[in-house]
Length: 317
Image (cartoon, rainbow, N blue to C red):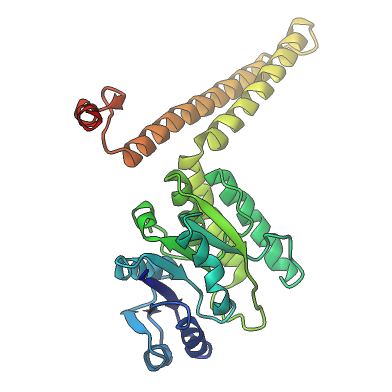
């Protein structure tokens, strides 16, 4: 029988946690509540509801809680992550796990907006969500409609793909980028959400800005052609045009100084440096991803190692 484990990160969620655990138990084999340094009755309520509880000595952040949960659930065939504030409906868990059980996906992302349903989302939240979705998709190369969803399902073989380097709420975007880099199949299914029970302890503006900065930092490494080469190319074009205009004015006697032309040349050189940096970083990123995804890749030879080829030949005999 497939073992399904639900991971519930929780920080001071005594009001809603008991109900979420009890409803989730109907669809999974095991529930692990990660108490992230709560100061209320979160631990007691989770225990009474029948969940396994792992506690952090202090509040480390959602990313750290998920890392702890994944490590504890590594023997499970399917892992479901669900927020403990009551916004998600545990009755929808089968919608997330079925595509994995049927071999259709490696990861299933519960989306509030897959069909463009935005009427229940506060406008200030949706604006921020749209920006984060665009940034995450640009960095990962995916087309995800809800990059900040905490309601997801994962097949066991996906676990090694995740870095868990982000300890806070930026973990949602980071996991999508890690999954994309690993070539995992991601499917989205529509889920509902309640905002009348919002128990978030973090200001949504500072939360959104923090996640966006994290995504931009990852974009710098994961998509250097966008981050460096594209802006550098634009600067080169502008520098060349301005240089020709300023130098033409100098030759025509309109201006007696070459200073504007020199500035334009410097701008072109800066643009060239940025563009070249992006190309180099992109090559390095591709090399690193290939080494990570294929342990037999020989960096010096730029090809699969001879030992791996020998094994393949031997298997083919």
